Structure formats: C-alpha cells, structure tokens
Figure (cartoon, helix red, strand yellow):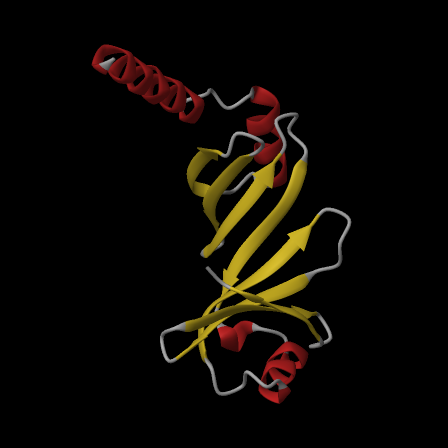
Length: 146
C-alpha cells in the first residue's frame, strides 16, 4: 500500500511539474512581441487555460493574459494612486471607502470591455477589498479580496 501511495505522489509531482513547464506556443510569444515590442524583463507563467506574462514597459509594471491561440485577453498596468485620472480619484474620495488604506492600483483593459481601474484597499489590516471604477470615477463594484 505504501508503494502505491508513493507512486501516485511521484506521478502527481511529475504531472504538475510538466504542466508548469509547458512550452509557450509561438503564436502566444509572437502576439506578445507584436503588441508589446519594447517590453523588458519578460516573465511567462503557464496558467493551464491561458498564459500570463509580466513585464516592464516604459517604466510601468504590466501583466497581460493571452489565450493558447495567441489572442490577447487582458492587461493590467500598475499605477500610483496619484497617477489616476482626476475623476477616478474624486470617485474614490466620495466613496464610503475614502478612509481605507490604498495599497495597489491598476489600470485594467479587457477584451470587449471599457477601460476601468482596480484599487486594492484595506482597513485595520484585516478587511481587504478590490474596488472597480470606470473612467468617469463611478464605483462599479467592490469585491472582498482574498
């Protein structure tokens, strides 16, 4: 019985290691190079259903998701809160979360959706949320962050 369990653990480890080491398809890397030709510090992650790439472009940290066919799906660019459009800053200041601590801020582009912004906030180090604002500063939704 012990040999069976050890064998299963070994094969599971090999399977998951191979899943994470899958070669990035050329369609994906070519699509990335076309969309972001000046990207530096490029790091790929295989998310099994899509590929995620993190990189630096013009001093900004960005991550983008591509399908296995090389189709761009979304990207997030990290910003400073002060770099947000004034409408988004005002929207946050008028929200019920204005006194919460701001952590990370992202400009989010998704295929087929308008540009929006995600602000990660926390209160008392325990309560954490992601706030989503449209470009006009309207709070679209708040989601508990894990």
